[in-house]
Length: 229
Image (cartoon, rainbow, N blue to C red; front, side):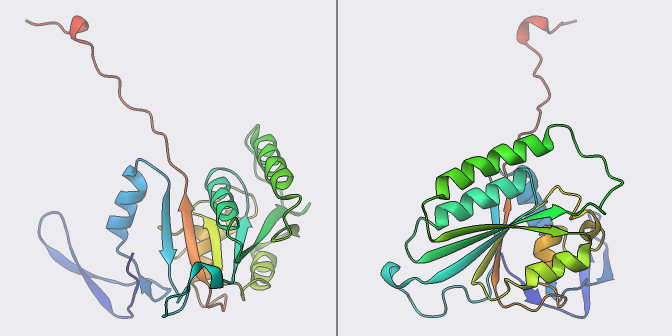
């Protein structure tokens, strides 16, 4: 995916061939959002979008010389599960250290209905992950309790010196509910948008992961049920 710095107006062609102008949104990275949305909507598999800020440098590095720190920001459910699973696979490389940060809502966070079974699904997923990494010194796991977007941003900022953040495209959590309201790039989701914004000063690359969406298809009418006039 190509990210280009823009601050002026972008000419847009409508479906009728008419052109109009609209202001480009902040942050200054303009996404080819139509293409990205199309891929996210119709891809027959999980999708990753990489915001590359020089990951690996400009010179070729052999596999034996890789030395990188990857941080997974985990809030809960589908896309975050996929992001964590991908991060765990990356950590199988001996030159990669993985840090997993799980964000939990503080007792002050209330007023939202949590979907039944959500917590159970998350806990079972994390239990399996923690059992898998129990003897792996290159992987660390910790939990942070946050009460508002300010505390969330502050906690994320503590890990800004990593080489790569891996995040879910659309985390489902009470913690991210307020961040959803300020998302500048819906293609990337609230957390990745935050990571590439001026609000959080980091040069780390960002990998955004969307888990494969299984959509219901309209049943096809059988030949035997078709009536011919």
